[in-house]
Length: 422
Ligand code: ATP
Ligand code: MG
Image (cartoon, rainbow, N blue to C red):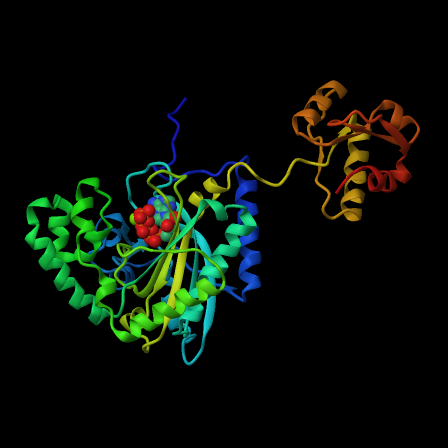
């Protein structure tokens, strides 16, 4: 026997036992997006490498070390998308969707990052992304938070998540603050870890995001960006918090929340949980007004978030809708097999949501009955020798004590109507 080929580390199959949980969450997402008037956009999984370098930023974790980059047969450098914002914006610019227009968009799909795989951190993972273009005010910032919170409510996880907010101000304000932060960190250079020493030159704000506990005290004493915001940025942020207060949505302002990507400005936020260990951020986003121009468009407002489906599904726990069949159809012998296939189609015509599994591949009555039980169906529908002889059919409950009923085949639809809860 030849050696079995295995999946790539950090890239997981989602097996049929798990897919009902995914479908349930995806269904709620679709429904909530529709509630708020967000429209779905579908995007390629592969883009030119240049797109991510220009949007995410050269000195971010993603671009420096996490991207799957490969050369196409004709020599172009392509990348498996590590996130969705860049591709979404590229598509909108390419199709002229941003000329004096507003858009509320969402997308779903796999993302790829070459990270160290662990619980809640994979190399292929799935995100739902939301992007809104052309709306500069804090009202839309708040709407994204209302929308995400409604999703948590639908999934019963609101109590497991808390909202953290910060403002990164304008690029100019950030630049001025960056110098103040660098001065502070230089004064404490010996207390920095190797990663932070490197970032001091390239991306000092990211040091605030360090997960190294030995850096905690040093960072607690660092100057705070919020103290260096200008009037306009402050007013924007106050506009957002006023809306959240009015809607009675609890939040915490976290001055150390800077987000990993370069393109954010003003509002940034994260929904975090304590129930998933260190992989506690389920949903993260913010405003990225500068990015549209950076990718060759006209200056335009933009805000979005991305949520990690694996982490969200883990948080929802075991709850999943019942997907077991209502009925398993047993037909003993060739004539009964043919008859059951035809009757099954009649039932599917009559009950479009009926989950009906027809036994295929023959087998004795005992054998088929075992399969019916294993399928977790609520009922077995039986065409045995007796039934075939007098054109009847029997319905036997498999998960309750009710008695078996036998009716004429012509009355089957009526019997199912009255007995099976579809
Ligand atoms: P983290 O700090 O956990 O690395 P991030 O800041 O890199 O997250 P984003 O790029 O903002 O994450 O992506 C948004 C969300 O996508 C995250 O909050 C998380 O839920 C999910 N996510 C990101 N990377 C992964 C991954 N490697 N595996 C699973 N989910 C992920
Ligand atoms: Mg990351």
